[in-house]
Amino acid sequence: MLLQRGLVLSGQVLNAFVVNARHPGKLAFSPEQEDDWLARFLHFQVAPVTRETFLAARRLQRSDQIPPWDSLILTPAGELGCSIV
Image 1 (cartoon, rainbow, N blue to C red):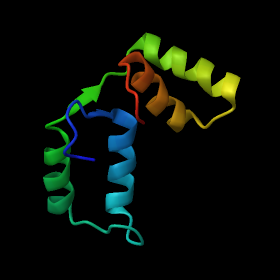
Image 2 (tube, rainbow, N blue to C red):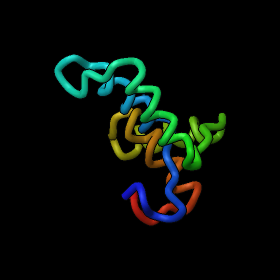
Image 3 (cartoon, rainbow, N blue to C red):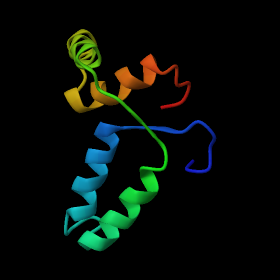
Image 4 (cartoon, one colour):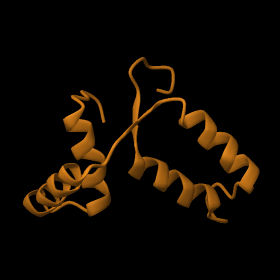
């Protein structure tokens, strides 16, 4: 997946990575390992969360009854025309 052209990451996906990287029962990365992986991920485009994106994500969350973190992944993906999420 990371070798695909046009890969875009959301800020929410990066936040989820950090949470799991730090968790002792999951990845349990050292701060240096976490930084190394983040540096790799940040070579890709990161979808911005503008005011409009945030409000659209809230509407999606309510209309589709999905968690707010999922709506903050799906909304920027839709705005950027991503065909695979």
